[in-house]
Image (cartoon, rainbow, N blue to C red):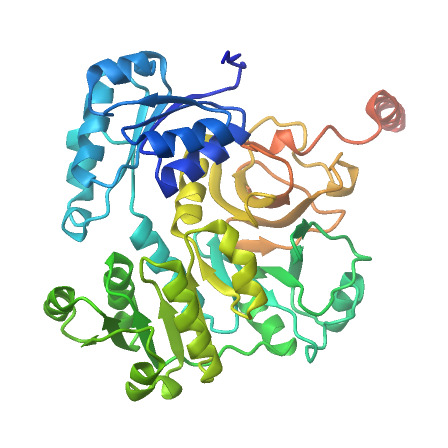
Length: 477
């Protein structure tokens, strides 16, 4: 296989072709990067080589010979996501010594998590990722806004985006976006809609339908007001049952107890129950099979406000979540690793789905895109994304009314954050240097606003018109 390295293409080495490594390789290759995947397992490498446009090398990522074969000296980035924190750290340290530009390591052990600042400096790590901690934080955000499928924050918390499922009894069902704006006075934007298996970046004539997934963005207070008006009032979550006692459970329980939420953990492994009891003294840990409906009911499932299924088995998570839904639990969140299960899960009525590998992919894509990308969130397997970008200096789109810019049809400028002001922009609004601009787009690999916002409409004719106007002003003067 021969590869042509483009001018803006990055050379990236991924060590570990498991679930996270495979997803990263897939996403990075789609953005036209030159990707090399290293793993000792022949079967996982075979899958990557057959299905992805990447180069595969079988071997140990710690080996200097293997790294040299992979082209580490010319590589821009090495990402180590094997199942061992220690191996990932050594891979990055070795790669740095051999001359790689940047390194990212997956480090998941809670004991290491407390020492990340020291580890980064000593090992020359540019970014440390912890999928379990990131997943726990996303679940906690979703629980804090119980009526939403998911919640994301941008511009250091000034802008909030919530993902809502449209139900038949909601007053916005059947309305066009331009009519929703007339009825609801909250300053928000519905920036993207998932309908079936398609992501739509809508315009004013787009009609909202039952079962649509809508992404509402704006100032946090405005989003909250809109949700209340639209019949999605967040309910107070007081107690939650978590199925599975892994690392996500550890991080999540600490976050939830800090919010004053009571947590019950159901874990089948007796030794792990003892560990969790010591680490999380303010929570109740039960040694039982959480897929058994009778056991869940005996542990007061019907009186739970929330249920989170985060075992290592998708099938167990799905079955127990259906039991929780059947017994009237308000908020049910399910961890799914196999992306082909997601459609099935949604068809069964479970909309709150968490995918740690997708969360980490977003983190790494944001890092790779560069300093101007402040935040990044992908919809439905990367069909579209919401990006927070910083407006640079001396760009041709600055101080030009948005209605005069050449903006593609599948791009929406969702919000502009200028210091402490959150603006839902209209045609006469302008972007100024240093603004944080949140954009929703179906374009791939965007890392700067000038890739989306063209020169003002009119070209030479517009320049001539402006020249005549300036000449008229001089004559008048």
